[in-house]
Amino acid sequence: MVSRDALHAELAARLDRFADVPDAVLCAVVTRDGLCFWVFDRAEMPELSGEPERDRALAAWLCAGCPVLDACLELELRTAGAESVGVWGGLAEDDRRAVHRAWAVRRAAGGRRVWKVRHPNRRPRGGEWE
Ligand code: SF4
Image (cartoon, rainbow, N blue to C red):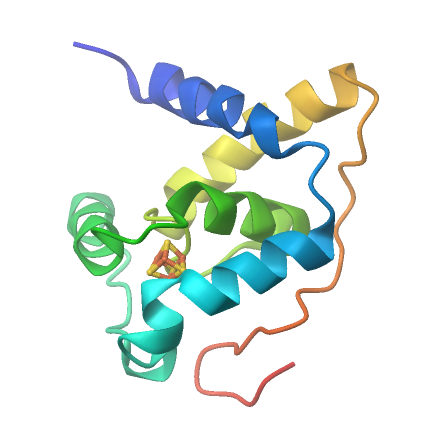
């Protein structure tokens, strides 16, 4: 069985192909094609429970079939980084934070930016667009 660390590392490596994609392009693609931006309202997404397996299943279910899953994950890692909350990129926050650690190491090793940028189209839980 593959360990969770190995899965996180594999996901981080899969995002290498986005390293040169500008933030604005990623954001435009995700907000245009992401299921939660046109099929359903993110504000209606169920809250995470804090129980890892349950949240993992919920995130996978919510994002199933989304055509921009990896782009969404890349955007979230750039904009929220280790403080990422909620469901983005098919992952609940614990997994995404773990992917972020591997992602940041890979980007820093490649001389890439790893600091956060502002998500131009982001609604926090129960709030208005930031
Ligand atoms: S991967 Fe999930 S959170 Fe991201 S745009 Fe698609 S449905 Fe929304």
